[in-house]
Image 1: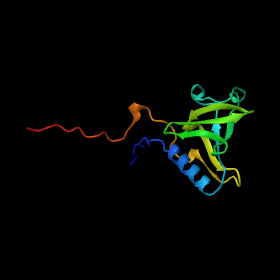
Image 2: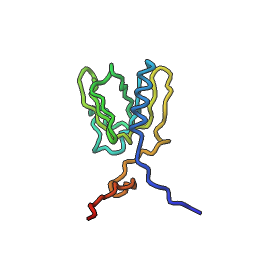
Image 3: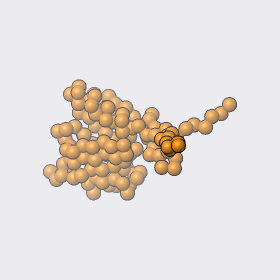
Image 4: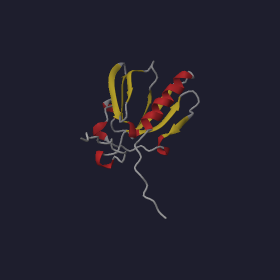
Length: 133
């Protein structure tokens, strides 16, 4: 018998936050590889990198500021050529998480990574309670 595969909410952001914590706790430099040829209208990187297919970011506390890994986006400030730029991209564009010291890491293609549209959200709804007289 065949079963319909349920839509699973993405959890790459959770894995990315956990990997970041693990790397920093172990004195590694957390790095991420990001695809730039998808979701282009949601990506903000320095202009000279906009036409590249991928870019690698050092997201250590020493290399970037204001790091925020939310459910759908990664945001931080980083220096390129001595100038501070705000970096913004969807979590689903992260291809690989690794550390600089020995390149140990995790590819994100093994995790549910696509954002669910609100209509596709299959999580159970909260029950509606009403007062019974």
